[in-house]
Length: 117
View (spheres, rainbow, N blue to C red):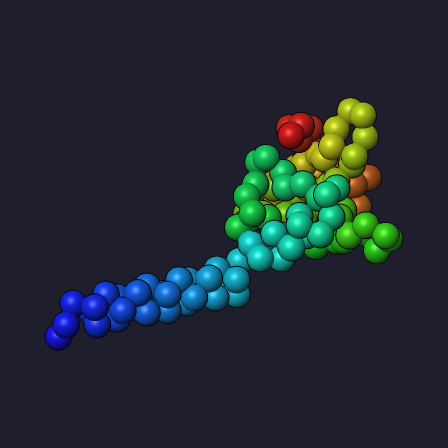
């Protein structure tokens, strides 16, 4: 087989692999939706304790900006506070807060202040 056919076949195989990998990441993680939120609204940030692959926003602001209000990953729940004291706060998923409701910051106890970006 001529050399240029092998190179073309290798390039096609590499492109197909990249497309498949992109599809797997896009369908099995929130990475693409997180990237979209960050691209379309500058007020969106990802918690420093999390990652674009594991962070899952579960309550989104319904106003003119589409930033997350509440999110989670495997280890923490997050609330976007956007105050002078904290951009966001978080609490471990394995918390012992009495009456804990992941959608109500007033039920969270021993919250930790997120890192500023």
